[in-house]
Amino acid sequence: MDLEGKRQLRTILAKWIYDKTGGNEYHLAETDEFKVPDGWSGPIPSEDDVAAAIKWLEGEHLVRPHWTMDGLPSVQITHYGVTEMEEAISDPKTRTEHFVPLVNITNIHGSVYGSQIQQGSPGATQTGTFTFDQRNDVEAFIAAARQLLDNVSADVRTRTGADLDAMDRELKDGNPRAGILQALGREVRAALIAAAGSTAVQTLSAIQWP
Image (cartoon, rainbow, N blue to C red; front, side):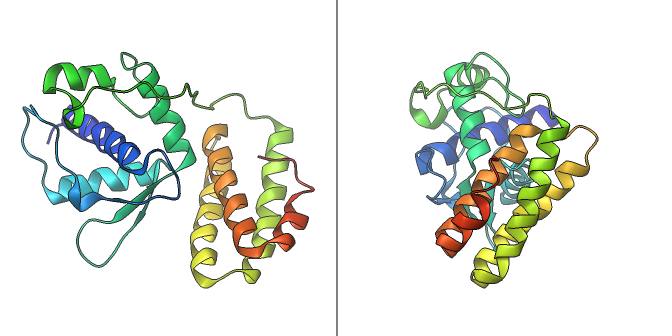
């Protein structure tokens, strides 16, 4: 599959996940049910092609897959994934940070999933300027969140720890992306409050971020 085909596959797969979950971060989409849209003129993607697209979306923090030993994973969409897909749906003629214009796919390959693109609520990719004060806030948030990991289940600890590691990596980048950090931070905050309750609320409430 050529580069443009990969970009289109990533975009329609993300749109399919958004539609399947209704844009709800807590719902799962079973990606082994994914099919290319009617009128797809390129080669039918293999399971490896779809897995590679999921892995790419995961690397960009747009989805959270639950990988198993074999087969395609069930997937949750992240807050950042919802935000960018709603931006793409709201302006289907414009490329977003990660997705090709939806109108290109529907014009060339027929309608996505056999239905018209529906207008979603307006969203904006949060790129913005990352300030020194924000860095301090993020570092304080990460430190406080890590202190709470001993108070949660092993599953939450593993998942949330991975998000915190991703935030650390993003901070070390020469140009940290505020949108990704905020999306991950919201997920971490929600997961810890759900798992640790009042302890998490008390620990994190002093940090006005994200």
